[in-house]
Length: 213
Length: 99
Image 1 (tube, each protein chain N blue to C red):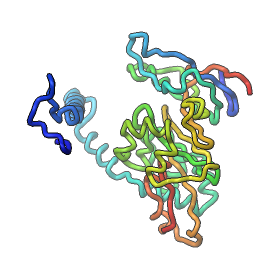
Image 2: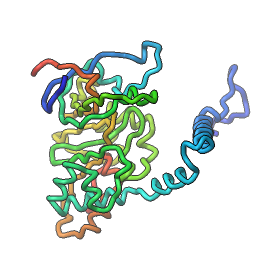
Image 3: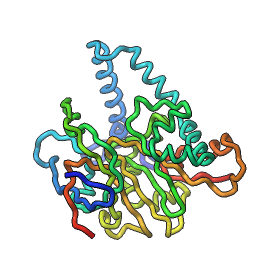
Image 4: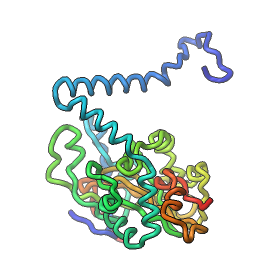
């Protein structure tokens, strides 16, 4: 029940059951189960395929993206290859993106900051970052990222100087975008592992920036 | 019609959702009718408007990363320089006016 609002009474003509909030998720779960069971029953896919796919997805996480970013910060040649062909660059580090849609890395610079959103659904570079966070899929983020990006960034604790261009990147089609954040000052001489440790998931979506501490 | 980086393009002001037919469209409402600049050519892809209905979506369509001034899309909302890119298939683009 919501705070300060007891639901032991009926409002004029309609009751406020919490179902309005919970029902859609239950609906989608039932839909997913029904479709999955039908596909398996009709032999389109096997139960094993479903399990393998879940395991594959669970094996992906933002640490993979962080390794890519750290390597790009250390190695200018790798960075160039990453910006030219992100899937091939990921492959160099043993990160398999063969089942993924095209991945494009976007470099943040002193004057340009990228922030990724999928206004139409929730397109995300899952092969490299794993499952997207809930906020990335929320209608609030999807709508507000394009309407008031600086305000959204500020809510993530990211305040950029006015002369930095914000480029909101709406992944509307066959591309998945990975932001290559700027290497923060104060990390000179750091090891690749130490660098990877400060590259958080959100900095590769472009809602935060890595910090040295 | 093919475009190259730097070309001005206009997104068609089309609303297939309003025809009453079942459609699958991947062009956001807020860029329709607007002029932008091709930033990159992303390759060629089967048409998702066809794939969504189990069809082949061939021939493949060029896909462009198009940059818009965010202020033009959402007037009165920008603080400093802000742009927005969307990936638009060729069937949604026509030549925009030259700068």
